[in-house]
Length: 104
Image 1 (tube, rainbow, N blue to C red):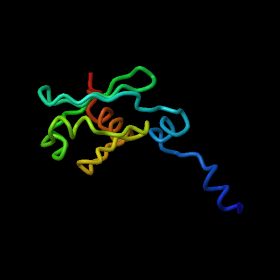
Image 2: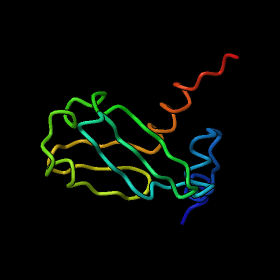
Image 3: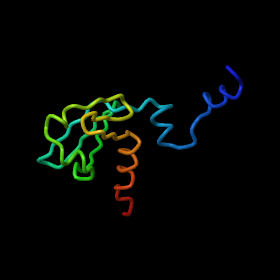
Image 4: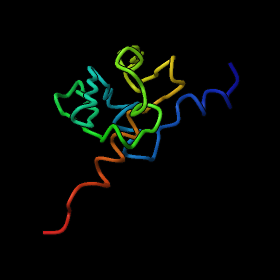
């Protein structure tokens, strides 16, 4: 392995979200989708829960229950092969941070 490859491989991210995921080991543990409640719920391995409206995702909101239940979770993202739809842990975290009410 060349030195330049080592530099890329060993480089730490300056992005705090990437640090949480790739250096801190934050992962998606479970996922639930509820069409009736218009909700995607993500349980993380640190016991935190993230939520997104299902209606934010056109393909998912139009999917039938079987398509919604057929997903792959690799810990840092969710993939629905029947729908060609992918959602990332990074995206869930960014949404959560942007929707926080930081004004007192």
